[in-house]
Length: 212
Image (cartoon, rainbow, N blue to C red; front, side):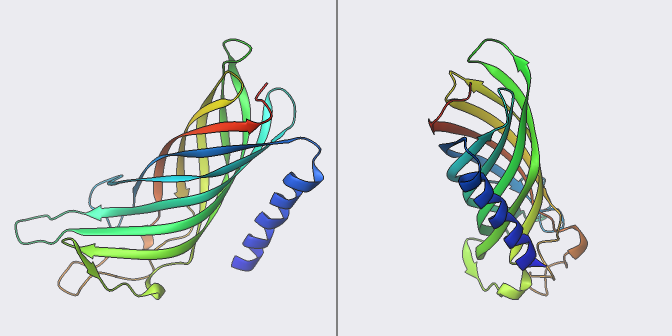
């Protein structure tokens, strides 16, 4: 199943870059706020970031198909519930490819427009890390899924034809943690609710081409 998903993304990426006559290239990056219900006892508890590059294929003057490829760091904090409880920091480092379709819904001027976007992302887990009260804690790779398949939805604003500001929310379709990864003296996890949730605020600078 995972091989099929990866193959699908690879084929579509190849079609955008090679087969289509019009595509544009840009750099992207920003801030990411993530959470993991079931592990974290507070919502959207971890602030980190992401970065990479974007390939955009124009359908017409209002609609675009965009592929983002890069690095994403997700995870969550589990804060102490009382004076004796421990603090846990879970970090999941991913190589991620997100494919979204963007369409224009608001035009302020020729160079300033707003729109919505929706799509899917596939992320491959590069490295899982967990710390207990600041100290590195052994993390067995079999405790987590090696991939994250997420639904993506968001909004964006385009300025001067080259600069795009965006806000995105993602939710992983598959549970990320497979079992209780915490020590026996800590309450167990609900493995049915350990999905990645993120809220992203970022910028795409189009280096080749123009959001016209």
